[in-house]
Length: 142
Image (cartoon, rainbow, N blue to C red; front, side, top):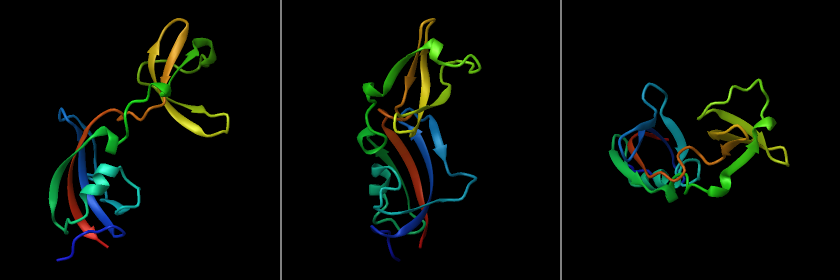
């Protein structure tokens, strides 16, 4: 039976949880995730777990934040004057918005603090700074 190696295209089913067991994503009820092993298409820690697995193999891997979405970067926080947010946007904690860089690139941000004067926006990935756990099963090696 062949095992997955760098350069192979594989299809996996997975469930991603935080270390406290809170689920943040799963392929359950969807098509398996397809990617090329070692290509950087998925987070490093999960990519590193697949080589050596065969079709039907399952495992659970713990992935430190440095091999997932990286540490939470304080430079990703930005305070903007509340007046800079259009009145048509109903501000609330956790609201996802998009900002634009000076080069025109869209950057997703999350509202993390609201005061009368300012709104704090966080451009970090929602899983930045968190260690993750993935239960994976190799469904197919193409």
